[in-house]
Image (cartoon, rainbow, N blue to C red; front, side, top):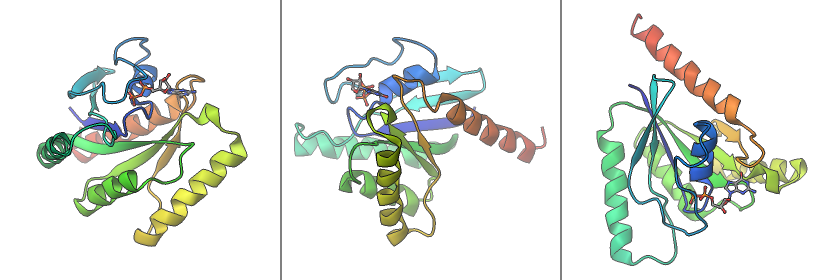
Length: 182
Ligand code: GDP
């Protein structure tokens, strides 16, 4: 089955987003504590695709050696996942573009791994501020890339962006089936 990976800095709102997408309250554990999701979790959605929950990166309070282990782990995941269609990189809409996120997206791009950005916690900002933050992102991305990647704006507390994301994924899945002649 096609697979979609969700990844981002610890505390970005990944567990909450996964719970929103799966309509479950406590499937992925949410916690205020950074670095709680350590292992890869798979969720089967609509019986036709897998959501892959990757561990959060970039928490300050881990040692250098565990950062290395994490990097290796993530690198291996992306190197061997043939089912992977797209990675969704989550970023908190409130933050300015962060080097760690930009570096990670750069790495995905260089390795030919398609990705989209998910801006989380949109309920925390006014529309104008959201627009400004996204423009900042665009400007930075366009220094390196020809286009701004596909992006989505979500809020797990206000249930924003759920349909758009699920429809996008359904569309990609349908295209793949067409390609396969099904
Ligand atoms: P993870 O570490 O990336 O899995 O992040 P969590 O889903 O555990 O969320 C981290 C914190 O942000 C928790 O306190 C959540 O309640 C909060 N949070 C997550 N998503 C949203 C959102 O869309 N809006 C708001 N206001 N808070 C959120």
